Length: 232
Image (cartoon, rainbow, N blue to C red; front, side):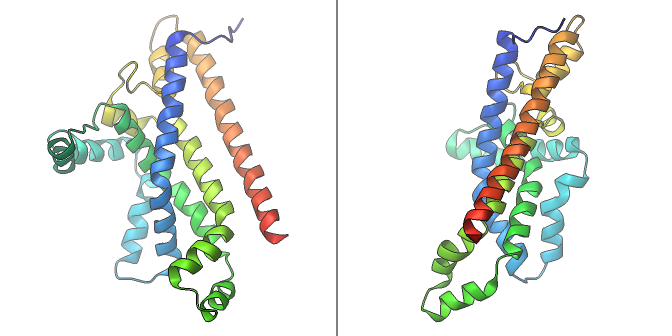
């Protein structure tokens, strides 16, 4: 019979996963809005290449993303060495690195949801605001941003859900350190490799499914309510 009570180590992995997913979502949000706006509203040299790079984590193996992060943000990597020398900040093999890996893997989903929402915004409303004397930034903040808010919310929750399930890039970049980088998927993997850990692995698998379904349902419900409020 399946015991529903989580062990301290399983609760620790769940808490760390929620922490990593929340930080990855929050830190990715402004970059996601900016990227969606650039792809939807601006033409510039290399746009196709930029679009490809943004969506690259969707098509390459997560281990590749994790290895590239390790090369760039490892202690001897160009960005990692600069962060350590300038701020004493280490990303590799830390929960901050896990948040970075999760954010990178979830970023394309966030951008896609925001971009679709932005492309549905009626530009005539923005043009009308400009004719009334509003500047570009004021139009974006008062007109564009509220109208694309369902996509922002949906993208944020999708990114949160995706971050909860990130495995390949995380284990490659930050390893599987108990209490530091062992998130829910990594704890499940460890239990599955441990004799007698099948029950714990099943508990975590069911928990991961419940969390993902709850996040997706919340995304749909909240986005629909925001859309109805905007159209009312």
